[in-house]
Length: 393
Image 1 (cartoon, rainbow, N blue to C red):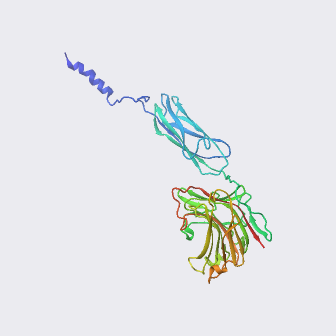
Image 2: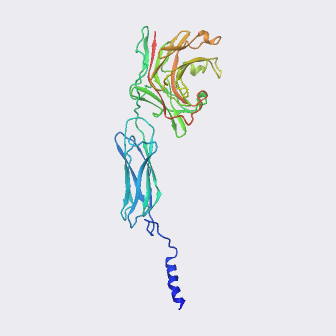
């Protein structure tokens, strides 16, 4: 037998099949299209809307191409923020674009931006290049649900006249009363936040002032509002109804500085802390007075605190008050007195509390007293002020 003639077909077969590999199930030996899906960022809007994800083939195929898809929650929640969907996309020969529609559920609540995903899997006659599409629902609402329950004080007192009040009605802060103080730099207490005048950090909602501390991608922002040169008072009864934030590193305050602060500085101007709270102790508020000579970098101070035993100051509204007379100040929480000072409290130091003072409302983040936020701290945190009322004799 002539083996030369038997060898030739084998050689030809090897040449013809050289470089060939077996086809994977569902994938042809022609160039395989690659599948990708886009990301989408849209505002939530005021009416139910849709996110339309585009799923593309890198090139047209001569065969039917299929791929499965399903939604997956991240911070967005099924039925509260979006409607879950799943299925299979089928690309006919020559088709390169398909769409996945996800219904977005809208509301009027102010909240953080939320995310969900659309995941691709199990391709047929194709491979997946980018199989995860992220949908970011941008929140554009301003309504904050604020339960009204809690302590409330009267709109008048015998022997007093209402000298000034802000009930925080309307759509924006009254510029004849309030100014935003801006900037970072620690504010003398190694605080971490940057104060802004952005609506994200301070706004009116449902007849309330909301000061919101946020963690914006690793930068802490908040607001600090003052009445300096606009609303300044000496003596009387001051009521501030508020619901407080909480959490490690959160530091809300409702307080006052002497009107001579711009000229004389702190602590000689005097400081009256109507209310302070450090967020890791959410059931305790503090009332404090600060004083000291001009140019001193620290203050003399005296204060006390009051606690709730079965709830926190974030659960409902409470009213923080001072009754302020010549040479005497008394502190109250829900009309319960828990602290007082008089002229003798400051000893030989000058008593700075018989002059006009202005108000400061702020929520600090971090600092020497509360410490810094940690993994347990939830953002955003909000201090909600229902009213401030100043009564004088």
